[in-house]
Image (cartoon, rainbow, N blue to C red; front, side):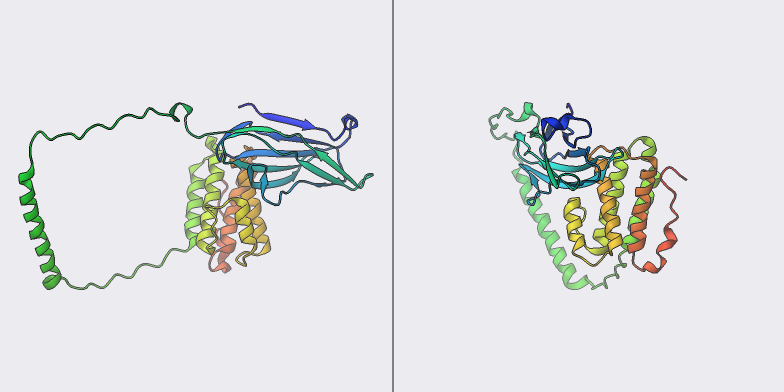
Amino acid sequence: MPKVIASLFLLLPALAAGAPRLEVTLDRDQVRVGEPVVYTLEVSGAPGREVVFPDPADGKFGDFEINSAVETDGKDGTREKRFIIQGFDIGSFTLPVPEVTLRGGEEEETVLAGPPLEIEVVSVLDPAEENPEIRDLKGPAELSRSYRWLIYPVLALLAVAAAGYLLYRKFFRREKKAAAAPPPRPAHEIALEELERIRKAGLPERGLVKEYYSRVSDAVRRYLENRFGLRAPERTTEEFLQEMATTSHLNGDQQKLVAEFLEESDLVKFARYGPTEREIAGVFAAAVRLVEETREGGSHRQECLCYPAPGEK
């Protein structure tokens, strides 16, 4: 699908060099139902000014729900915010006009407005199979022979089996003590073993970076659910971070570590971001660090922080 890129300047004079401008982009103009789309707002030419991006109170851009949002600074002095959005209705839609507010500088407040972008949501079904031909039901097939004579021997065998079972229960069955169930394994042991399996799989070296981030992220989410009862696997990153902020299971530094870890994973999984080798190693180290710092019996948390980075033996 062609990549959609659209830009709208505030006023015609803004075309002059150095004037603040807003660029609005979609990574695709056609998606399937529920498929994530990256919606990016980028502001340039506004050094030293506060940039206030839109933050819809209802968590939606028009007919699209906001899955997560990440705000970053660019290397060339730009400021951008990436939204991962999803649409669940089929048809053509127009995203609303985004507005970004600049504060400070010579003007107290400036509003940059972007263009409305078009996007089409299509069904996950194959269009060629949406209206399959409905065939008439066939009539019942008739057996060439009658097997009615088998009914009586079968009923006799069932009666004998039932009588034998009742005699067994009455005269021969003995109560057995249930074997004590082994205690459940600690959540951190399960998580560290899973992370070690992921490391040994060597996914980044085989070009499977997206799958690598997805498996590491899923392992951390399952650990947080098993360790603290937080419903991490079935929730979006934004929903999980909101729930985590209301609990006392993790301190401020640990909550920040979880937020950065999940947001970076979302960028790779949904926004097609290509991480560096250092970032790939860093996300694995962050996952191990989180498990070690929140494990049961945290006084020995440093004993397993010696995992080699992915690709190392």
